[in-house]
Length: 189
Ligand SMILES: Nc1nc2c(ncn2[C@@H]2O[C@H](COP(=O)(O)OP(=O)(O)OP(=O)(O)O)[C@@H](O)[C@H]2O)c(=O)[nH]1
Ligand SMILES: [Mg+2]
Image (tube, rainbow, N blue to C red):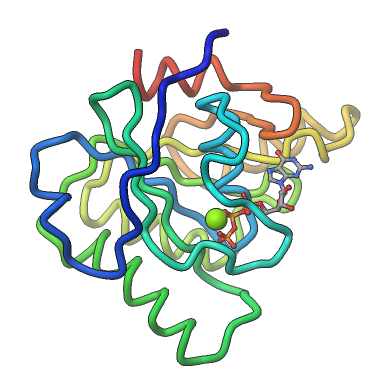
């Protein structure tokens, strides 16, 4: 499948007029280190577009990318465990909370990334409740599917399905790019 045109526009640390320019927004959210930045890179086919790293807490701003000239992909910091000071964690959580729950913005889609092997954690389910309470259009991406043993795959997927309710779930791997077409179709099709 062809690459999606994508370019970095700006890193936001709070309210910014950029988000008021009428461009539809798609937010990529999830725990630290679950692969939000990697999903954006693999989805667009642009390696190194969003900075990914094995250091949990890599993304510290809302990084805005313009995809196909018409949609903003927002790479948010992760919540939960990260290697930051309490103060930095508070700031990052504040940024996530502001964008999702206090700002006037209504993302066209919230791509909620979980770890396919670990399944949804308590903090994931808490976040999902918040998204449901505010009626966000959620699609769940079960990333790192390459780490699930083939013999356990069906069971893992059923467990995820049982815990997250009726949302669409797309098994995905940023490494193998499995699920990419389905996610691209869901977001940009
Ligand atoms: N095996 C495997 N590893 C992955 C996959 N996606 C991401 N990773 C690895 O997971 C680590 C975290 O990836 P990031 O994309 O930086 O994660 P993030 O959610 O953006 O992290 P923060 O910005 O810190 O919240 C990196 O070491 C990636 O190489 C995947 O599908 N499979
Ligand atoms: Mg990141």
